[in-house]
Every structure is written in C-alpha cells, then in structure tokens.
Length: 427
Image 1 (cartoon, rainbow, N blue to C red):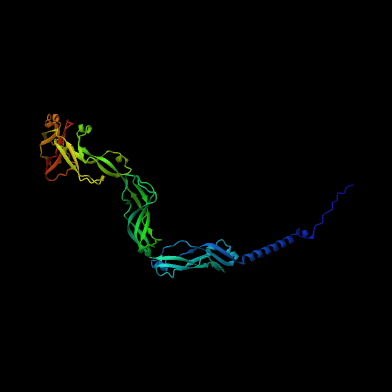
Image 2 (tube, helix red, strand yellow):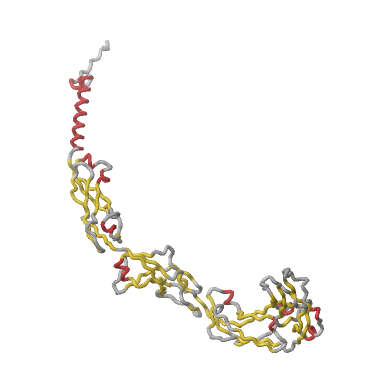
C-alpha cells in the first residue's frame, strides 16, 4: 500500500522572514536609505572637470577703444578650454557650461597698435573654483578706419605656355570701373599706393573675352603687407581684353537714292587706294570673311554727266586702318551720259500748309536731269514732280526757304542732280 502523505520541505529562518510584511517593509527602507546616502555622497563630493570650447566674449561696444574710434581689425571668435573644481552635482548639470564666462578687458587700449589682452574666467555658480584654462590671453590689433578711392589699373600676366595665334593682336584692356574704394586700418592705408586688377592668361585668345580680375594692393616698400584692407565695391572688377585680327579689304561705296535700274546693275566706280589693311575684332566672322568694307556714301543727286571725283575721309571710329589714309579718292566716270534742264511746276494742292502760310514758288527752273542720252533727250517737263514735306521743318514768320525733292515719274535709268528749294511765306 503506497503512502499519499508527502513530507513537507523545511524552510530556512531567513526565507521565512521575507514572508512577513513588516520585515519586507523595514528591509526596503534600509536599502533606500543606503542608496540615498551613497548618491548624496557622490553628488556632493568635489571633482575636477574640463569644459571645452568656451567662447571668449569681446564686449567691444561702448568700450574705451570704441569710444576713441579704434576698431578691432583681426576680430574673430576665440575659444578656450576651462578646468574647474566644485561639487559634482553642479559640474554635472547640463546647463553648467553656460555659467562659465570668459572675457577680456579693453581698459589698456588707448591708441592704435597690437595688444596682448589677458583673459578672465568667472563662473556664475555656487562654490566653484577655476583651476586653469588653455589660453591666458589673446592678441588683438586696434586702429582707426580709413576709407579712400584709387584709380584702378590693369595687369595682364602671361603664365608659362601662353601664346597668341599668328595674325592676332591683343589690344589695351578695358576695365569695368575706373576707380575703386577701399577701407582699412590707417597704418596699412598709409602704405597703400595703388590698386591693380590682375588677370592671368593661360590660353590662346582668338576673340575678345572678359575676365573677373583679382584685386591686388600695391604699397611702398618691399615688405608692404595688407592683411586688413578690403574692397568696398559690391561688384567684381571685370577686365575685357579685346583681341583683333588684321585683314585686307577692298574699299567700297554705298550709293543712296538709287534709281531702279542701278539697283539691279550698280554703277562702276574706282577707289584709290584699292586695298587697305584693317584691324577688326576677332570673332566677328561675318566681317572677317567679307571682301569689302564700306568707307562712305554718295547720293545720286551729286553725280553729274562728267568725270566725277570725290574725296572721302575715313572714319577711324568705324574701322581701325593699319596704314594711315588721309582720304579715299572715289571716281565715277559718267562722261557717256547726257543732261537736260527742265522747268518743274510746284503746286500746293498736295501740301498741307498751315493756315497762315502761302507757297510763293510756282515753278522751279533749270532742274538738271542726268541719264543716258536716249532717255533724257525724250522727256518733257511733266516727267518731274516736286515732293515737299514739312514734318521736319520749322516755319518762321516771314519768307522761308524750304528744301524739296524732285523725282522722275517713269524714268528708271535717270536721276535729278542738285538740290532745290521753294519759298513759303508765313504771315
């Protein structure tokens, strides 16, 4: 017969204590007190701790040098590492680094110069001792501010390997400004003599190009240094380097008021000299590839039925001639033409005259018509007519001489030579 009775395991006296609520409560209180004492001892113990990158405050505004118009010219942000000693709970506070105040005094700054100013460190917290800090002082340069304008010059530096293609010419550079304004300490400004816009060329220039220059300050003496002078101009200084090329051209004439037939078959003429060397802007391929350049204009009204000769002075502002040409001689030989004189009627019917104006001229005599013999010998007075425009004419009281144009109705190979006027009377 098996026994259903089991032997009960016996418990230790210590284990039986934890089954009593009163003991558990007392034990918990004891542990809490011990932990509290341990933490309290740790937090109130004195420790040393280093705090890095504490900014040195430069309280310049309202200081002695500020009141004497002395400016800090090498001002920057200064940082130091500070070691302090104090209660651990103070030093371990996350806000504690903000209570470390590092400053310098400007009381000794009374004139321009470089000053070695001692750093003072204070802690805005209980009983905390500053043990040491990484930098005992900072060096600051004080001076009066001077502002001055300088005419700026260019300097083109050809670095090794630079070359200009054959036939190309680099002309005088053009700067985007004539002068610049600079500012700096009086000591450095007293040594500054000029300002240059410097461009380095390291490539072949086959057309005009514009570069952003480097501004260089030049001073008297070999050891002139300018650490604190600055340019006040907001925009960069640009240097444009014009590049040109020399090309041979045939000088040509532009005829104006051309009759229809000569638009299709231009008049023959000759120009002396018949070839010129002209310097043109590189990159202007349309002009470089052209055979002719226009040196001037001749109105058909200036052409007679003779050997016409004109002297045209070249305009150097349009083209840069390599060889000096005082004047081009233009010859238009029309000796095979003929001329006839007409009397042309003038009518006010098609002219809008002011109410107080009267057209006095009824006809214009001796109007010259030039052209091929067959054409001009067979025309009559009705072939020509007067065109009068008052758009650009200011009529004054009295008799006014007003220029007019005389045109041909049907002839397309002939023209009217000379200039003509009519009289208009204003009451």
